[in-house]
Length: 283
Image (cartoon, rainbow, N blue to C red; front, side, top):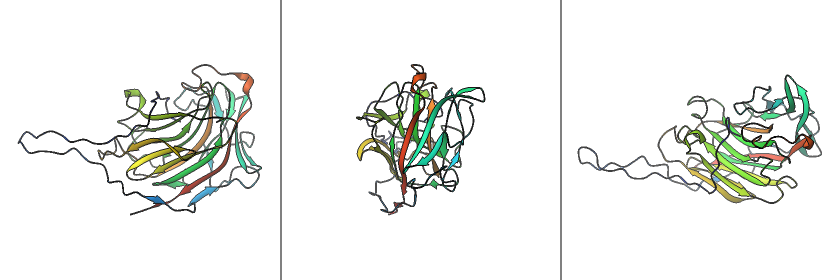
């Protein structure tokens, strides 16, 4: 879920550094090289997880809320609340509900859950099993933002989109990353897409493996996206700092609302079976 909407690539994109030419003194130079892929693995027991095996509001020790209706940089139409009507847990799942109702000058409500300062991670495997909302005008996302914004405002400190979906293009899943060097406004975005069956009627597993070498995105354990660290500094790879998780359902916006909003679909929901984060085993 970008802070702004992105143009879409269609294939797995792997970035790798190349070699430079000779210097003015005739000495050969080599362009910066990214880290070696050490084949990092991940622990088998989550270091952080929510199985949603309780009832009521999302666990406050793990989740907070972004609240408001300021458009969130995308001209979104919803007002995000901390109400159980928009985010509640029952029957083993978290349900985020987008509703057609007026609040604070907006005509829709929804929820945007965040783990800021409750679940912040540097590297690891992130797994989210989810069923997505249906209907034109919906824009659900499972994503990550920097906790400390060490390199500056978006997109300098980076963003990772583990899953994005727009309702007017059903079953097409987008996996992306954003950096100062690679994002949509300069047409250098790193994005992969995959059409999967029944994204809005069945649960699917969305996963990101994050190591010092690469971001690798999977759907149902199939590799869809890869973006390798080129070793050129934060403008290309700001993913050496803490990030936190976000789960939300936006309504409308520059991308989600590109074909309008069908008001007959509401209420519509994203259901999440579990969220699990596994620590990377360093080498």
